[in-house]
Each structure stands twice: as structure tokens, then as C-alpha cells.
Image (cartoon, rainbow, N blue to C red; front, side, top):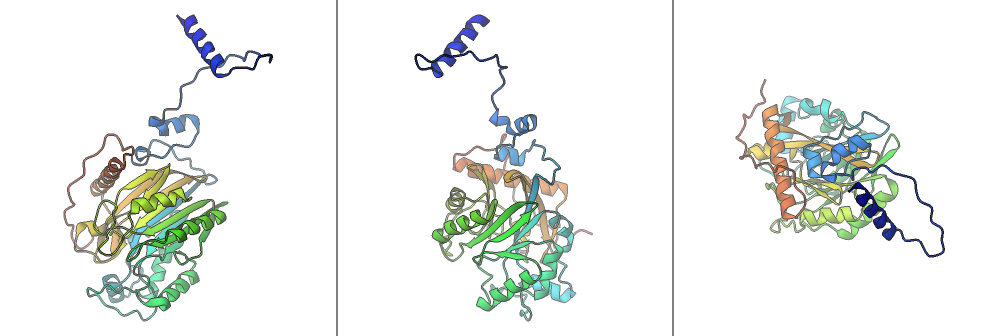
Length: 390
């Protein structure tokens, strides 16, 4: 029986490697047969072989790949949700005479990455009027920049629907303030480039709230970043508010479907897509082997009127060389109208299960692989106390 199998294998190889007539053929030496890569078990396969894992929802939410503790190969990008030190946040910081207050509980964590990337959604300048009321015209005291440096912010995305609330002067003052304090900006045109031990990250940002995203500018921005950097990071302000799934909101108008725009960004050369604006954290997608995050939720903001708007996740995205190999999300809850505090273990597990279930719902809709087993979607969270636990 074994002889017959070997003979069949030899015949198959001969048929697929035919040699032209008249050309001598020398038999090759014997080779050990090995298992084909098991892509359903890719993280384990990566650990066994030393090859980098194929990214999937399963490998993200149930990782078995061991990231090497090697700063020569590993770089980390930490991303927050919306930072809006305006309205109630600005009021309470002024009342406390403490502009580090919103950032203190999480600062040790957020600064412990190679690059920390935030979405700053309020202009910062001296003389910002303090207004805790229901205004939708946002600004924050210039002294909040000390909180941004405390949390280790390296790049601030300014492409969003509130940075322009005080016109071109507010944008210019904010950009100047950030750069004076060592924080680069994305979303104003130029690519922000940061070199991390020989690997260059390039950051570009685009706003799709109140208008469609300019796809010509998007493609050109990614191409420009691709020329300057090894890893291209694109952040979008997009999607319908207060939803767990990415979708357009034509009434605002926010006409673009985030899924369509995210796919285009990957097709045009982005290595990772960062999403914000919906004020709820949403599921993620793996598209063509690249990660699209649709929303991280609020980070520093005063939306205390629902538990969902008080919750968010900080994403840490780990690259081995230029390939994303791991992602972790750390959940927090906002207390006292502006201060995020990390959740306890039980609440954090529920948040991450919610995020995984939302990711699987999106994958099912898009006919993409889900995690296994698919978790149930947890019930909406109960409203937590206004003040942080002692």
C-alpha cells in the first residue's frame, strides 16, 4: 500500500513538472513531508515556525501568538477615542484649578507606548469662554496641553467637526500650541512622521462629519504618507453617533459609509485605519489582512447622560517590523463629567465581549470570518455612579 502511494506521488510530481524532450533530468534527493500551514490555527503556527501571524478577528480577540519582547522588532501605537476638554470638562478643570485632572488616572498607561495618538476635538487657546451649558460650540483652556503631555500624546488628529468651532484662528492657535509642546498634528494637510527605532510611522486624518470625505484628497494623502513612512496610519472622523455598528447618517449629513471608506483607505495603501466620532466604541474589521477600527468611544468628555457614552476603549496596536501582529483594548468609564478611569475586571470583560460581538455582527454582514465561538451580545450596561470609586 505504501509503495502504491509513493508511486502515485511520483507520478503526480512528474505530471506537474514535465521536462522538455531531450533534456536530461536528475532525480532529487529525498525530502521530509511536513504539514501544510493551518491558517485556522495561525497564531500557534506562527509560534511554532517563527513566521508572523495572519491577522484575523480570532487572533485579535483570542490571541495565542506570543509577541517577542524585542524592542528591535516591536513597536506599539496607542490610540484613544475623542478628547474633548470643553464644556463641562473645561468648567470642572477651571473650578479645580487643575488641568491635569482628566488625564491622571490613565496617564501611566497611555504614555507607555512608542507612539500615543489622540483625536483632539476642541480648539485650545487662552481666553476660551468657560461654558458648562448645552452648547455645541467647543473650546478648551490652553493649559489642557499640559494634560496631553502628561498622558504622553505624540500626535493629535485635528480632522473633525469641532476643531473649527472658533474658526481659522482657533485652528492655528491649537496647532501652534501643540507643536510648541512637542505634539505633532494630523488632518491639516502635512503628514506627521515619527521615527521609532528606524521604523517611520506616517499619520494623516480626514473628517467626514457634515460633508463627504474627499476621496481624491484621501488617496493623495495616503500616497504622500506612503512615500515618507514605512507604516501609514489613517484616522477618520465618521459614522452615525450612538450606534454599535458603523453606518452613514445622511440626516447630519454624514453621507459616507465608514465601511466603504475604510476599505478604500486599505486598498490605497493604509496599514491601519483608526475611527472615531460615534461616542460609542464599535466593533473592528480585518480587511485584506489590515485592521480597521471604527470607533473607540469618548475618552475625555462630559457626556454623562448614558452609560454607553461614558465607556470607551484605549487600543494598543503592536507591530512586528511593519506588520500588525496584535491588538489589545483596555476599557474605562468616565466619571465626574470628564475623567476616564479603568474598569474593574468584570466590567472590562463585558465591554470586550460587547466589542467582539459587534465585530462578529459586522463580519457576518460582510461575509467575512468571525471569531469562534461567536459570543452573545451582552445586555446594555447599567448606569454607574457619577463619582469614581474611592
